[in-house]
Length: 225
Length: 317
Image 1: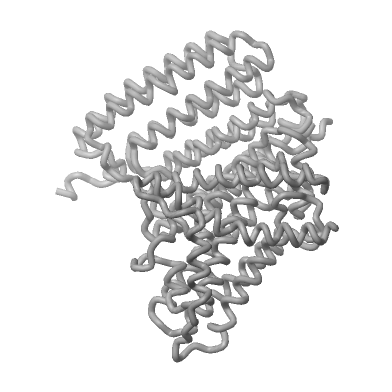
Image 2: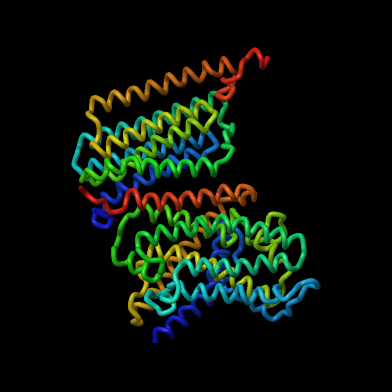
């Protein structure tokens, strides 16, 4: 089935999937933390839009609840919490530049190719329309990991972690039309709790090494002094 | 008849290019709260330059003299291939989009050589920068073109437009990415803000203007005209590949007239977007251009990947 045979709504799902992958790349390239959180919020909003589109096309009303939950948590609440954390830590002017952005980007592109290759057998055995997007969801997970590897700021690590969760949620939506409601609510609560715990950890890390740059964690404090 | 139309279309292309440049300048002036010059000002400037005698710098060779003609001729030939008001014209059948990129490269090569030919510091600096930028922009442009070619199964522009017209409205993720990549490349290749500033030649950061600093008179007129045509070429490429609706598919008078009006509207809309982005963004440092173009390349690659991942036909077992 090629894209010309799908309905317009199904095409819109695929288009949104592509845009979600793009936001992952944008996060990879952002050097300012505030903008990173903004792109993360955008990814949450796109994810909510995709979920509600799937709910509409396939007539699964319970997915509307997941979409609303995603919009509320990942589109609004968590970004606002991270944003306020960044301001309270005084990190909003700090740059976390990549040493070689082009190389990281190309690494990200090859991760997309890899996830396509891995998900090829899964896709071949199913008639589901939205399953084409499963490679994208896997790519979002891997790109979130890449984001955590390449950054030094702890806040960026948290954003990478959250975007991994976005990828998993997206995979659940496009492959099995969402997880059971109980599981989804549990995960949503977990993510919210995780944000709070991370916030506490930020203050802990800053109190002990006076910075949120995790490169400093590998140095011995006695030698430094 | 068809050949006559093709020649007329090329003439329209070449003739309308300064008007588009004037329109962009007009919007930009209005956006910056300045009094705008007349839309016909680029024509007047070209006429004024054409009447003046060109001056040959002392150490320049034949390359310097031949370059304006080569640049202009290659740009006009490129304009002949790109469907403006109608598809299925005989000129569009001769060459595909790879030839188009080749013509751009030919013109650029001679412009760069002419910049170094005169032996001034500015010329060499501009040439080196132009080559740096184009070597990064060209892969992004070709990748975007290949994305289109994979959907349409052809690299011929006219056939590709026919394909898009025949399939009707399809939301293709790959086209969205390819269009983004092509727009970024167009801005870089035509020397607009944020890559280069077309309005000044008194800056150390200039690129295009640095290469043509020694040109005067009608040679300068030809080069300026060629760069205006090139800007319009990119505009027409973006407008007609991704939104070909309205272009004439037969050669009746109504269809052609409608096609001309529609492409005029599309181009003026694109020009508004360009002018708005030029008013909003500042020129970036030359060393940031590499990041900007690698983003354009990334968009094109994502277009290609999303074509393969999301759009391609699947085989069921």
